[in-house]
Length: 368
Image (cartoon, rainbow, N blue to C red):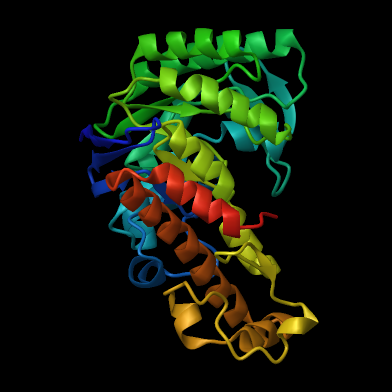
């Protein structure tokens, strides 16, 4: 398992590398479809491999711990066999879900006590427990347990979150037994000084990769961009850099320009189920009346299964009729759009024209 950079853009911090894991290697920068419960909603593994053409998915420690539970996954010797996925899996640690989904009962230096969002049952996550859960899942890339706070928190909250995340990071590393990759997470809110200090603390512990956490939590976009632009180039050059939970196309382009290697976001899959579909000129809402008679693909520039075989009129019909096929075809399209965006980004970096590609893309693309 290793990471090597083999191409750097001459005008920006954009770069191309190769990350090797126990279930294969993948070229960076890349986007991870989100399969929270071990499934990307509406798609089967064959769709992901043969239609979307992804080599990696993201699943979640918190959700899989609650359902189906570790005793089930132990029977299958890990998540790969359980979900019939023989490629790479990254698991988030559950820190964000504890912050965003649950009723928090108690947070201390030891860990977090919370109530399940499913049935209200009480649970206690410590850094040690989170690593043991991820080792049971046998994910190729594991994340440390971190303390995430909301946008607008006071300075004391951010300082405490950094202190806890550093402490928990050390405990995560110390308890880890398997050979899979473990990534540290950088907190610090929207203070450049905090981010710089926390980066140094996490890097001093030493991890296989580093993630920027605590963004996309309700802040203005310019604040998010400011932190990405400040902290990413300061992260270790020889380790993968992961921007957690940020994923509009224009955000990805900005982050790649500043040196980010890895992305995930629920946006393409969630929007697909809501009828919002990404195209080269921007997202469209397929339920609109204007598409009722449109005998044309979603995007003439898209080569996905959906665009090659079905019209806007049919996709509108499926969505307005609440046909389950709508979810599948829309999700295939949206994820393929993202995977193709990453391919085009890598091609532009290799050709030393990333900035031109970014400018051309954004000149046509109208965001949500």
